[in-house]
Image (cartoon, rainbow, N blue to C red; front, side):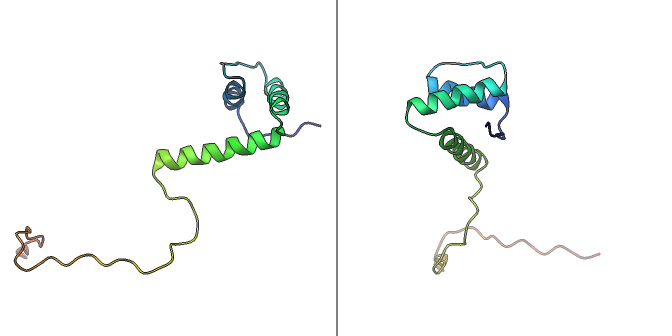
Length: 102
């Protein structure tokens, strides 16, 4: 019994290529899945483990590419306050001048 996986043929080809350490270009999704199942068995894994790892890797790549924080609970603990600027500082003035009203 074959499970339907949410991967495109190109994604399956990448997974298969990674397992075989050389470029593979399967003709169909079915052939790709069968080859992945064979390769997974050779290294002592179930095909589901390989596909789960591929999903996790894809999520990590999306996270790194977009710079978005992964979903999860907010951090616990107090926020560190910003350091005050000393009065004798040469820091530039950051307030904007008021505009004349018409």
